[in-house]
Structures are given as structure tokens and as C-alpha cells.
Image 1 (cartoon, rainbow, N blue to C red):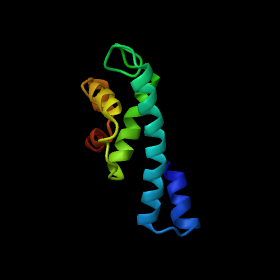
Image 2: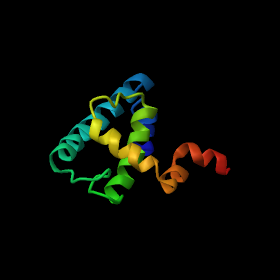
Image 3: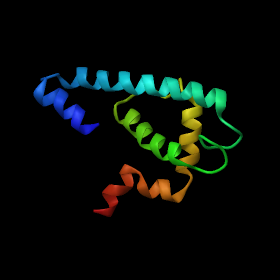
Image 4: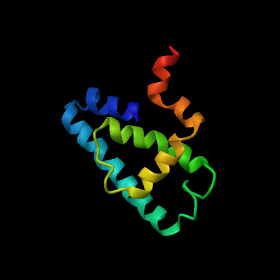
Length: 105
């Protein structure tokens, strides 16, 4: 993600506001598709695939962080928000969060 954003800014000279809008656009497309899948196929349980977190949850959490970093509304995505909240109640996810990494330095 950062490599692409740097390319957009430095090589293509796309101004920050337009680059951020581009980034939000692609997060929105991915989240819209995932939200539909979760609404249709999500089994009982707080995570993407049931009662325990898995790879899908591990991939979703940083994308939610990115969406928030780029000031994207998560209102249209109640299932994504619910999964993210469930993940963030787990200590390992809390310790891996970007805001926790600053404390480790």
C-alpha cells in the first residue's frame, strides 16, 4: 500500500487530496464486496468465519485501520465493524495494532 501511495505522489505527482480519494475509492470497493459476503455467508459467531479468528480476520483488521487513517466512513459496513470490534477485544490484536507499536519503540 505505501509503495503504491509513494508512486502516486512522487512519480505521478498526484496531490495528496486526490491520492487519498483514490485510496478511499479502492478500500470502499473491497469493503463493499466483503460486506456482501459477510452478510450472505457469515456463520454464527463474531468473526469472519465463525467462533474463532482466522486469516480473514487478520487481514481485515489492518484494512479497517487504513480506512480510518484515510477518514473513510465505516457506517455502510456493519458486519465489517462487528468483526473488527470482536477482533479488537482480543489481546493479540490489541498488541499488534499500529497505535500499540509506537509504545514499543
